[in-house]
Image (cartoon, rainbow, N blue to C red):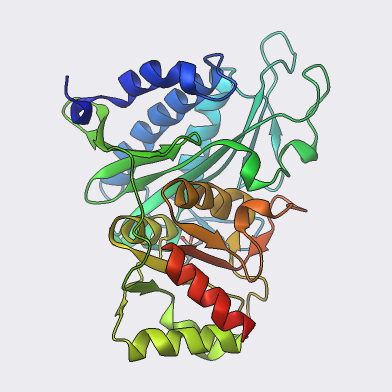
Length: 330
Ligand code: FDP
């Protein structure tokens, strides 16, 4: 079989020994995410027909309205991981607190924790626009016999053993890294398989696309960001903003560009979450030759202080992110 026709299942088996801390567990977690993503993909595709669009009537911890599909995706990913007894803990952007997963023998012997945003870009669900899932996998820090603590979820992004996303777009893709480059798999619905379509993904060093919510213009708090955006417009760059982080990031990864969510008057620390969103994408960006920064720090070097913490995010082509940093220092 050609490299391009390889399925995700085959890729995982072939690369298992190369995975950091390999014991088969990490492969099984990615396999479970692959399975849950198929189920969520099915529902996303059928959402209007099976009456799963619209608000669920609850708010998450961030005070944002939960959509029915948010709640559904959250349950599917969590249950799939719990049922397989392969992780010791899960934290989701949709839940206030992390979940301790106990095996059938009530122990904590599994090595990994998963942090995820089960359905990112939820304001796009009801209008048939691309949305995504973001996940990060870390090794538990405390000894296997010790109960899980919050510290196990508050690890720097650089400690990730795997990070990835699923993009539910015109086609569905699963893109991930275990620290040895980035590979993208496209869902082939007749086979029911993710097929390697984008091996060894690379982000152009420079690009022409800048992605920001233009409606934030009068709410930006940093002159450096205003100046950078002015420069983008003067240079006749292309403005593209879907409003789903995964989709915006994915386009810029493939074409070269930068995504910005800076501090605003409403969100003084930026809107996006460090542990559920920024870290996984930062890991992928770096592995593909790109960069992810906050105002003065590499995203992957930030020590999280709470699982729902927000950060300013500048991510994508290296030179563009570096230029934003220059403008912020001026
Ligand atoms: P959403 O609120 O629709 O879930 O993660 C939050 C997120 O979407 C990102 O996917 C997206 O990039 C951003 O927020 C959009 O925020 P704005 O509506 O403020 O532009």
